[in-house]
Image (cartoon, rainbow, N blue to C red; front, side, top):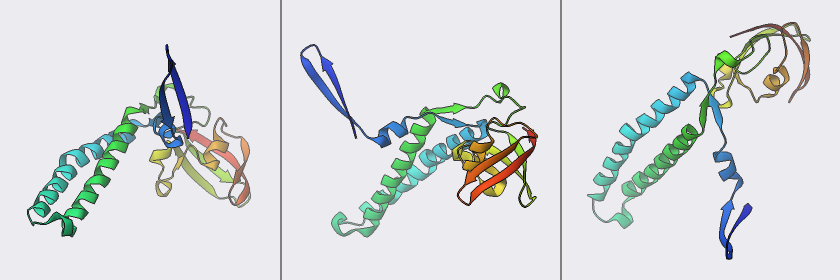
Length: 181
């Protein structure tokens, strides 16, 4: 926890408490246009469909009488709390979201949104990954987080470069075969 003291003319006027969570919640997060649109659609779905449905469940449970022994009411209120938390997190993420301007990226070097063809020099396996923002990573689709060990090791490299990357399984050596968008 971080303590912050703001003093006014007459001395100490306010004390604020900031946790690590507060600091992390206010960080800028980068998205592709598609990733940002997906988040906006999810938020709209939660607000326009899910929220009214849970309100309806609460109303129906309330009509059944004594709330102190009403499990349906408790379940609906818990679901409402979880929904509101998810909505709040999405709104915070969208407030701090920035879209990556692909036109400003150097296509000759590995960077975010690069599609990189690699060759593992030990077993000769060839693989292809697209480096994406952390929140858009989908390993089954070949999209790895720009913060992953392999992506961090590749950033700034050019086609033809050989790079040694420390991964949880040990040291691996790759050759960058091709870089594209």
